[in-house]
Length: 159
Image (tube, rainbow, N blue to C red; front, side):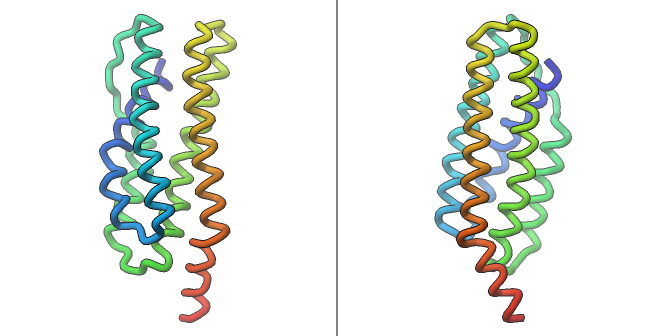
């Protein structure tokens, strides 16, 4: 339950922070990925609420300090970086820290739910979210390799 509460807090925090980040990014596809992720995050939040309902547990918000720190790092990065060539590359790296944290936690939750023979609906909801997080990770990696990191590399070679 504590991991589930962490993820509930994590999704809520992302809903709060992501809209601030999107306009500061230069790469249009990266902006679109983040907009889609924001929409997915709202769905993830609702899925967790559904899980709490299925478990007949009141969902009390607790602060996920890990997510708070990861988002604050991005916020600081965007606040103090005036170099668009490296900003998107740095953002992708920081965003993948968030995604990897979520993949690890949702993977753990899904495994625990299956081991404890929780309702199939709960496992399915967790699996859906886990797969969406994995897909975002793959898209961020692809964008970094094919465009964003190359632009950052060119900037460093020129300076």
